Amino acid sequence: MQIHRRLNFRLKPTPEQEKQFSQFAGVCRLVFNLALEQRRKWGKSHGCNFFTASADLKDLRIEFDFVRAVSQTAQLQALRDLDKAFKNFFAGRASFPQPRKRGVHDSFRFMGREVKVEKLNKNWAWIKLPKIGLVKLRLSRKIEGKITDATVMRDAHGWIVSICVKREIEERERLPAEVGGDLGVAAPLTLSTGQVFHLPPELAKAEKRRKAAQKQASRRQRGSKRHEKAMRRVRKLAAKMARIRAHWQHVVSHELAENFGVVVFEALKIKNMVRSAKGTIDAPGKNVAQKSGLNRAIHNVGMAGLQSKTRYKLEERSGEMRLVDPKHTSQQCSCCGAIDRESRKSQAVFLCTTCGFTLNADHNASINIHRRGSTPSACIATGTDVDSRRRHMVPGPEASTARVAA
Image (cartoon, rainbow, N blue to C red; front, side, top):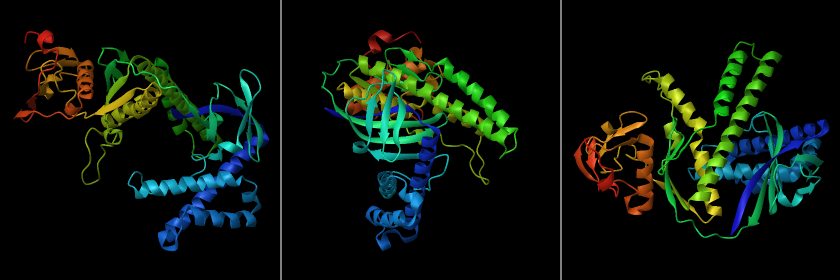
């Protein structure tokens, strides 16, 4: 089986190479924005597309030396990014492409055939980039497979290279065990087995330091050196939080893929979940501050990132990740199948109003999620309406043993 994986490595460029990196990123950003403005103004009526933009790029390279000093491949990759952005827009998958900005889109990409990596020792290697030369690379992991492309980008801590590799892996026999997982805020992940995964405490510490740094930056004059210094500290702490979160997601997803053949999650619409409650001037929202805090907590967990990492790790092991309808998973009793929102007493307590079954609310929801994923015909809950807030479902297999006195 053939897979594609992206590996990130920290670069240690010389001061001269850092200037070249900034120049490459700036020219690629310029090429992208010029092509975007051309297509925005003339559009399809004048046949503007990737091929016409590539032809115009040749004239641009002849006329301007600073454009010609940058690799043409990197500039063509920027045009391909724009073409892909327009395809996603016309297909309804994304909004209209926006101009790239300095400090936000500091990146450029090369084709794999142009990039070579030579190992120096256990921890370091050279990476050869077109028109830049050999750049020192921190070899934090092995590079296995064929390199298809390499993207150089800048974050709060400096420059990194993201290398995409293609390699063959042996197909494995799928593990028989299945599990359901309920994603939340207070408990980021609760499995139907009862196991609970919490965010590392280092993330909360970094968040506290980031808030203090933001408060300090807000007291300084915008545009001053002291303000820029404070904002650099904020960006570094935010980058640290992202690394801690990504590491936690990799650890959890690896454990799931190693122990289960099928993992079932809810098909959550994160964009709708984190929608602002501020409303409009004519119709202002309610509990705006509380909703903003909830939105930050949802982003802090990184639910979509955890699902994507779990998916590809399962695919490597011939496993499968399934998504089910999240409707009523937290209100349905995993014992008798009754649905009543009054059964959810609090964030952590579930007490069925029909049979008296009690369990941790997240654990109860994860059992329902697992059951829906195990029976495809029951992915979308259906039942007989009793009233506006209660429906009775087919009792689960635990009904005979898990029932308690009301």
